[in-house]
Length: 260
Image (cartoon, rainbow, N blue to C red; front, top):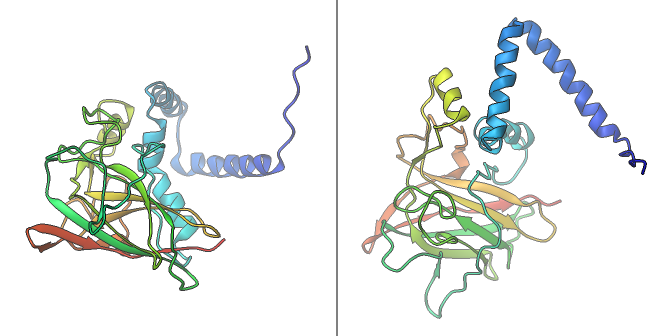
């Protein structure tokens, strides 16, 4: 049986040729010798075999891609999806007279946080029934479904904004955490003398008809790792304050989605 050839993709060819052109210029500028090139190839091979390519791309590349694509555009700045996103999270629905509550165990450790926000469009209109996906780490600094004994969907879930684009959800204050350092990514951190810490943050993904999907994170003022986030994912318009109210923490931030 003759294998069917893949149809030529001119865009792939265009991007690849541009990539090679930039690589050639980079090699000249860096004055890389063949031993260094071979060391890089071997390290990249170990990166792939260890399953850390998504981690490395997320931490060291994606933030630069997002800045190049979105810094000059209106709307909330996107941030990293991160390696701890999973699909199939449960729908969270509010009980009468109570806010939404992100999926969690009874008597979950951590400081209780009520986080609220509004979702609107760059055209100024509030986005009713926008889908909001939310996830975060727990009081041990770990994400469920990843090196954690917590239930799979702990501190994960999705919900919808109200008729005015508003939402409020009860959760806990997330913690700063270290990215994995026991593999090739950790080696790279040592080579470049970088720490592995990320500041505390909440993850959000917003979806609404007629708008680009917005994937972003929310950070908190005063976190010691904000200025040196290993993933360089912090943006000024993604910062908010943690305040005390009635024995718990409260925080809020509004989000603006781009029309397509």
